[in-house]
Structure formats: C-alpha cells, structure tokens
Length: 302
Image (cartoon, rainbow, N blue to C red):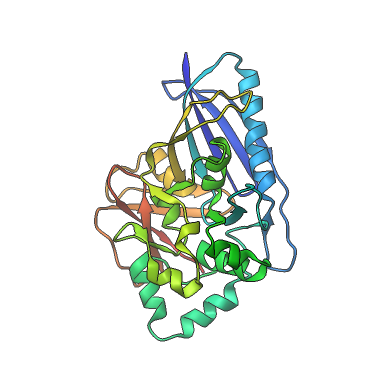
C-alpha cells in the first residue's frame, strides 16, 4: 500500500505523520527541540535541531511501518522563522531567528516613521512593517554576521523559511524553493504580482539571488535523495505555511469560511476568495493555498 508522509515543522517541535489513501493516520511521531533566548525578546533555533527533529521523526515513523511505500511528501512549517546558510557547504551562518523574536523592532519603528513607507509596504505585501516577518530578520543577519553581506552579494548565501530549509535537506541541496503562502509572510513578496519585490529588497539591501524560487502550494517541488531510511525519488508535492495549511485542512474552500487554530499562538483565518480586502481595523491580508491565488485575512495584534 502507498502512503503520504506529512511533515509539520513547528515552533517548538516537529511532527511527522503517515497517512493512508483514505486520509487515516497510520502512525505518527513528534520530537521537540531547544528554544534559545540569547537576550530578552530574542528567540532563536539551531537550524540543525530543526532538521534533526524532522529527520528523527521520519525515521521513527518508518520504523513503526516497515515496508511502507511513500507516494509523496508534504511539508507545513512555522512560516516567518528565518534561516540563512552557505550555498556551498550547506551550513547555517547563524541561528534561525524565530517569528516571535523582537530584535528588529527598533529597525521597523524607524521605517514606520518615514512618510508613506508603511502604506507602501502594506500595498505591496498586505503586511504591516513589523519584526514578526522575515525581511528585517534577513537584514539583521546580513549586517551582524561578519562577511555575510559580501558573500550574499556573490550569491554564496541562501535564505529560506523552515520549509525551504527542510526541502533543501531532503533534496540534498538540489532544490531551493518555497510556496506562495510562506513567501507572502516574509514582507518581501508582492502579493499582486506574485514575485519578490525588487523595491522592497532595496530597503533592506537584500540581494535577490539569495531568495528561493516561489511556486504554488500544490505541485512537485523536488524529489528526495537517498537518506538510507528514506529512498531517493519520492516527490515532495506540497508545501504551505502551517496556518494556511490549516485553513485548507479545515475545508474552508469557499469565501466567508473561517477557522481558528490553537498552537504556540491563536490564529484566526478567513477565506476571502479572489477579492483582496483592504482592512482599516488591523487585519492582515496574505495568500492562502489554492489552485489560483486566494486571499486570506487574519487579525494582527502587533
């Protein structure tokens, strides 16, 4: 029998679930990893811990289901958490800066004071200027890790949210990609053109070459290399940010349908269909999963 292997790379741990074709859970495994708080308001993960928690959970699941044939792999992830690594060695150049981290708040406050900048960002990305998102985190790493900016300009550094990092590891460094839902949480992605926004990249002095290719959430992103316990050639055929994946998983397929998820935080998401809402009440507009671009709106409490 063929199965689907689902990976959920979360904020405090990673879960791997094996599903049969009817959607029934066959077996699952969960592994936590350390949280690092180097300064008040700072939150980091060791990218090796992220991968090891996924790697170990896959091993445990396949050990409990010997001989299971994996038809495809899907990945959901904690979204805005930011990883930068050396393109040639595959080694992270700094710990992952977690979505909860507030170290870039002063930089964001500086940007918001400039006339028209907050409106510009919201129009292009659907997001407010906030330390929550990936763009300021990338800028911080490039500024504060010796030699990082110079290497990035030469195309020797890669950026990814944790889905991209796990995809890179599963494919043996052959695929550097993400999906629309995760890209739309970086504060660098134009949700109208569905492209990385070159004007925004200039604000943060981020070279476009470090950014992953952006694809639809459903489709072939790449195939596994032989990891011993996991054979080569398994298609990785779905990627989505965890909250957008939950919106889809809760079958909110039609405009007006809404879901609430409790995890590290509480997240309310509403499917608004193909119409992009403009909120005057603190709501964020971002991209949801779908065969075409769907808008999704949630409450922002920044």
